[in-house]
Image 1: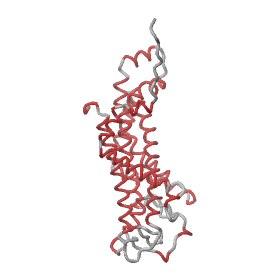
Image 2 (image 1 turned 90 degrees about the vertical axis):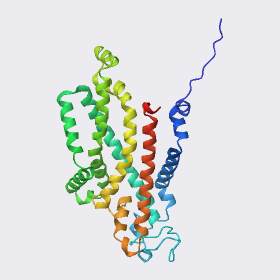
Image 3 (image 1 turned 120 degrees about the vertical axis):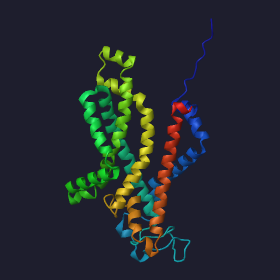
Image 4 (image 1 turned 30 degrees about the vertical axis):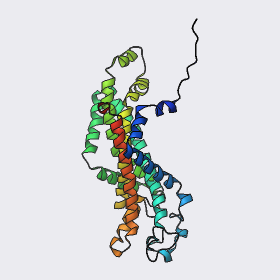
Amino acid sequence: MTDQTDTKVPSRAERFFDSDLWWSFKSHKSAVGAAIVLVLVILTAFLAPLLSPQNPYDLAALELWNAELPPIWMEGGQMPYLLGTDVQGRDILSGILYGTRISIIIGIASVAVSLVVGIGLGLMAGYYGGWIDNVLMRIGDVLLSIPIVLVAILVSSVAQQFLSPAWREAGVAAVLVMAIAMYSWVQYARVVRAQTMVERRKEYVMASRLVGTPARRLMLKHILPNTLTPIFVAATLNFGLAILIEATLSFLGVGMPPNQPSLGTLIRVGNQYLFSGSWWIVLFPSIQLCILVVAVNMLGDWLRDALNPKLR
């Protein structure tokens, strides 16, 4: 009689820290550095009410007599305005922290919406094929033939025209999310469609169809998990792109309003005073935007290489 010993089943966290993905992350110095920078940026953005010396959205807190103060290390700088103030007396550091939070929220929301739409339409196109596939892919081709900024500007402008003045400022963030997702879903749909067309011809899918498994369950429970790896990589890279698109729209004046500034709005306002000597109004928000996008893209590049089986 042999002794039976209990074997401990490792948890998900233990399996993750023992995986090749975690080892690849630890050994990739640029990915670790980008992750640290990204975590710091996100934490400071969402802790802005605790860290910032001023609420830039509160018009009563703005002090016009402190307008255009230089950074603290320059002559004329004052505490607590470490990075100076803009023409309305808004603290630049506070505006950056609050603006980063808006940019991150819009980026995450737009990626989430485009993921849901793109995955759903890609599964339908790849599984059913026929006229459904042709219609969805031709719509995607039309959207891809137009520059993404023009698509976002068109959607944003049309949507704001239909909103009443009372809802225009309140709904501008939702309009931006829909404008960015209107274009971004095509990439996810193409990836999922291609993977679905491969998976639906495999034996396990055919066997499930023979036993009467509903198409919805078959797509969500069996086919979708096999398409998540390229989708996850694309979502990481598109998160940085969504932040850039939001900043571009806000810079062009069809994004967030000046009383709810994102990074793009801060750059647009500061650009008007670039040659008047108040260079800090546009410089520091631009640096924050570059740091955020570069950190996201570096993580996306590492993830793409780490999940590519040809590079293992």
